[in-house]
Length: 136
Image (cartoon, rainbow, N blue to C red; front, top):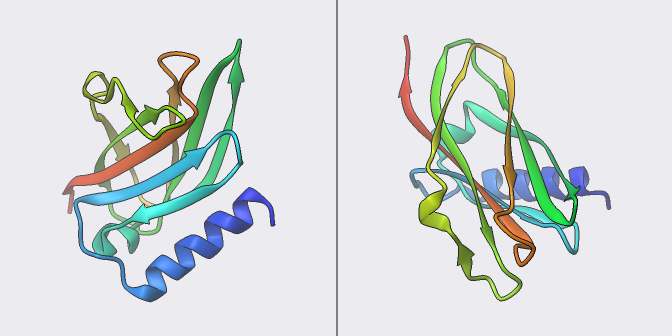
């Protein structure tokens, strides 16, 4: 199964199982195995935003991950997102140095969140997306 198939099946399972209500959606990307999974999600946010695509690659030996988000509603969404990197053992690398950045998604719009690893030890990326406010 390709990476998009894996993401779609994991996301569908998470939504069908009724995600635990949390502050946002998390997508984990393992750049070594090619696996991507939705770790947890807010059912409220999941009804408004979907992870449309996940890509990853190398830039001169440093990992890069990109998550494409798509609005499922006609309203403007105010979101925050960041990508945090971890090493092969699962320890976060510079998580505090990666602040959330503001994202505005207008009705049915698409945007991407990209993160470049802080060093060559980073092999896993975790994209975190949370809703800050919804404009009427």
